[in-house]
Image 1 (cartoon, one colour):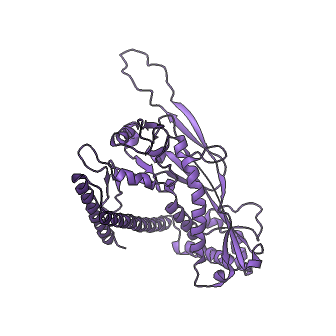
Image 2 (cartoon, rainbow, N blue to C red; image 1 turned 180 degrees about the vertical axis):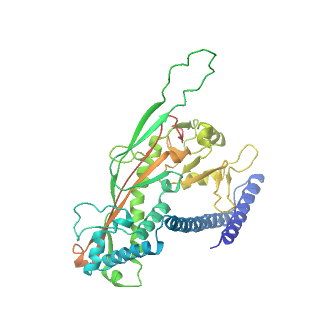
Image 3 (tube, rainbow, N blue to C red; image 1 turned 45 degrees about the horizontal axis):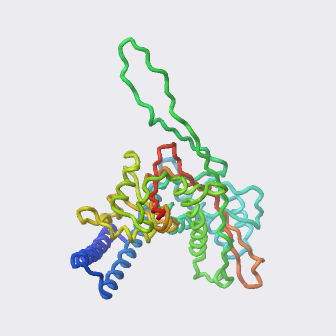
Length: 416
């Protein structure tokens, strides 16, 4: 899909949004509810609006990936590397890996390729002590597909969180510094400068918790069928499974023997007044926005689940203008009160005392991946069912890097 086609799709989506807004304005003006026919038409347009948004996001992510590949090849050429030669090495490893997935009996040269792991290109350390019958590091194209599946299912990875990849799983200390309480001063002539006031330093330790996809079963017939794209199937299934576990922890994890979630780490921004157990008002959202320091509001975004978005789409400000606005330009996001939002289904529904909405600068939340993902093929365990089991492992962690300035805050529904 070209840029022009994306713009046309955005235009069609905007037209549907306008129709729905005009219908709600008419109903409100006539002080009545939607008729059954109007509700059906509204819901259909709303579903088409969401479907178009998903397609637009997919196409724009693909364009971004293509841009990254081109930039990577340009960097390699500048460094004197031959992209074609490096790609041939990666292709050889990928072909050997696919043979391992489809058929456990490998040619000696293929097994040698996998055992070496091409670490000089991949820069991924194979786990010590892994036998030839054990797991193998996944090739780069498989890894990218797995991450793409995680993006689709994980709101925390879609947000502007800081994502880093390390070669080892050693504890990663991230320093923090808070100097907001200090400021300079005018110094008189022949006057001694005030004594030093040091900023407050701290540290947040990022670990590497081991996540497993659990076992994914594939029939032997499908593995032997050359028409079956086993790479895409496995990367999607494994990525979704790992993402579901990680995204839950990145959102609401306790921080004890698991990542500390962003909701857990966020500070209080606004609590709804009595009676707002399942609702939020325009004023609440404004108060939440302004509970964040202006320095963090520049790159801030919202986070909530889809049912909360549905409620927010119906809110209007004091001038009867909707708070929700659709993005029309390429890569322009939909916004609430002028700020983009991320849908995260692990965020709580609006309910009694629920922390249902987040707002802030999510670049202060760090997601750490250890890149040496391994895939194990379980051949004999399910042989009597003519099935093969696959098991993936990925290490990672996440935490809010907060020096005490609270870059992300939450809205909490009232208790009564």
